[in-house]
Structure formats: C-alpha cells, structure tokens
Image 1 (cartoon, rainbow, N blue to C red):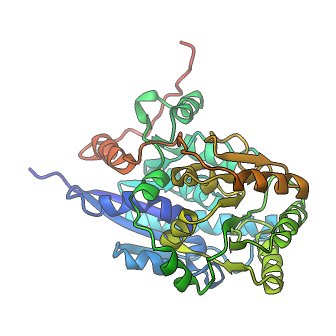
Image 2 (image 1 turned 180 degrees about the horizontal axis):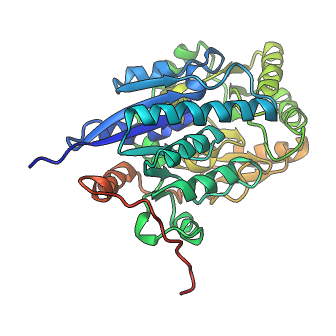
Length: 387
C-alpha cells in the first residue's frame, strides 16, 4: 500500500526568509513523498517592500494562498498588535480549511510567531528552522524562543544553538544541527558578473563599494533615527566610495528609517537605494563589495562565506555566533568610521561557523524520517537537563 504524501505548508513572510528557505523548498517540491504548498504573507504582498511575491512566482512553486496581514506602515505597538491578531485569526482559518500535515517555519519574526500559534491551536506539528539563536537587541529574541516551544521538530544552525533548544526543554531526539540554509545559498548561487549587476541596477560600480542594511533595534526606545544618522554621517564622508543600500524591514520605526534613507540618497549620488535586491542581486552585490555594513543577520550568517568583512553596528545581532570577519562597533560615528577603515584593510579567508552548505539535504532526510507515514503525538514531555 502506497503511503499518502506528506502535506507540507511552508509559510514565508519576507523576501529574506524566502531567500533563505528557497533551496529547501525547491528540493521539497521535487520529492515524490511530499506535497508542498506555500502560504505567502507579510511584506511579500506590499508594493513599498518590493512586492516580492513576484520573485516566488518565478520559481514555479505552488502558492496555495496569499494572506494579507499588514498595510504600508508598522510604526507602533498598536499596529503591530493589529497585525498579530489578524495573522493568528486568518492562519487559523486557513489551517482549518487546508489541514496540512505539518507547517514549516523559519526564524523569529512576530508574524511567524502568530503563524506558529495558529498551527498550535489547529493541532498541526511545526517544523522550526533556526531556533536557539539570540539577538539581544531585538524583540525577535522572545518570539524565536516562543516559536521553539510551539514546535515539534527543530533544525538548528549550529551545535551551540541545538544545545540551547534542548536547554529550553525540547527532547534531543527532535533537535538537529543541520547548519544554516543561508550558507548553502551562498555556495550554490551563480552570481551575476559585476558588469551585469551594474547594468541591472543602472548604477556605477567602478568605485569600491559597500552594501548597507540598517534595521530598527526594536528593544531600544526611539533610537532608530539617531543611530541611522550616525551611520549616514560616515557614508556621506566617503564620497570616494559607492553604497548599495537596502531599505529597513516592516518593524516599528522601519518606515521612518526608509524615509530618511530616501532623503539621504537624493542628496548623495554615490548611493543606490532599493526596497529589495532579491537573492541573486543581493549575493552578487556582496561578492564584489569591499564590506557589508549594518545590523542584518545576513551579515553574520551569510556574508562570511563570501570572505567579506561585516561591520555589525549596535546590539541588534548581539549574542549570535560570529565569524572572525565580523567587526562589531557601537552605533556612533567615530566607532563606525574606525570599523570601516579596519574592514577596508581586511583580506583573508573566513571560516564560517554556520555549516558546510549541505543543509537542505540534511533537513529533507530528517523531515521525511520524522513525519512521512507517521502518526505524530503532539504531547511533549519537558526534557530536564538534570535527571
């Protein structure tokens, strides 16, 4: 008797999380034992964030549903709470109608937390990618660990993160160190040539340039614009360089950051600003850059695989395991300037602590062994470290 296909609902909320999950999703889509369906939500559906659902459509994956949960802005707690309430309600309704066997989630965003909550009340097991990590400066920290407790299967990026998930009471039999999907993306993507990238962006790349992404530090009060301005002072000083800048995400103060960036770029012709580069252009931009500047997780996880230095500003990523190529600095003009000078002299091979780039194959084997043809008992025993 042939086993029924495993119905997997993968949920993607941003360009970044889709870009990370992409190699896994493309391979799952070809597995004869899996029925993969995508639920696309969040900033994917917003024009001011690049309407990045168009990137997903190019991959010819089965988009089962588009769920709208946010408007243009998300600049205060009330709007965030409104998004959260809509997310849990709409996804609970969707799960009750579609009844997937498992829900596949990545990361730590507040929207992802609510999707996990919807799956939990619908009694659907959750597969969580990239749990156990820490970002002390971001509210994502508490959402990530909460998603861990709502999840059945855990696919961590390092052994230290695996151990932290077990410390949270999860059974070691359901917690695996697979490495980070972002590393696999870097090692397998065929980047554009520098000339192709320049023509695509319509931006001169003959000068040395850096890639810049700066997000709000969500556990600090009203610090976003002040910190951004410290960074912009440094960028303005370096007219001998070019800067490719991507806009902030849909967190509180993100819209204010983007407005300031638009004003700055209008006055500084050595800067290029975009809502989204997409995976191919983003990786291509990093490949030919002299540094990556900002406070994005990509600078910590993916950039080291390009043997490029990352200037990590402030506390947003504080607590993450880092390669030696990461240069940490305070969100102050003099400190950022000092870090940039150090980065421009950096020239050595980097050992990335986030795996060997064979992550998706490991994940697929674990998912199949755990769920395919199995009846899952969602009652979990809290695993105590001392027994």
